[in-house]
Image 1 (cartoon, rainbow, N blue to C red):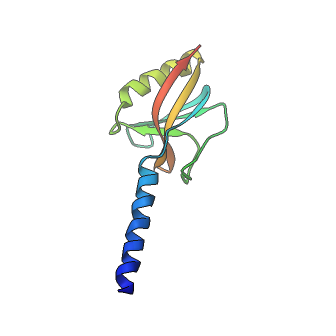
Image 2 (spheres, rainbow, N blue to C red; image 1 turned 60 degrees about the horizontal axis):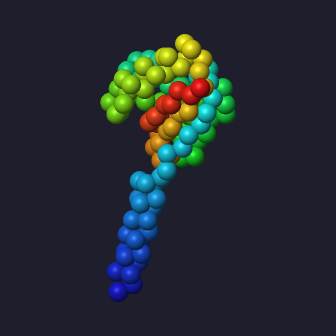
Length: 114
């Protein structure tokens, strides 16, 4: 009986953990695109802003916000990132608060601001 109670508690705790990470709120930062990195032998890019990197999920290499071509919105985000870098407009970057890729927070949105 103790084992059944222990397993129930374990699975309930894992369910809460999965729920809290699966539905983490997106996080945003505002600034200028200071660096636009591409490559690493992959069809991916990362943005570094002129403001401190925000890393709520604890990614191991938080030196920019990244996306690769397998992720939704890649082409649109890359076009917007190029424009933002060239024109030096203020951007609002939105990234997934519960996911890392290549050790970096995952970029999921980019707004060009005036």
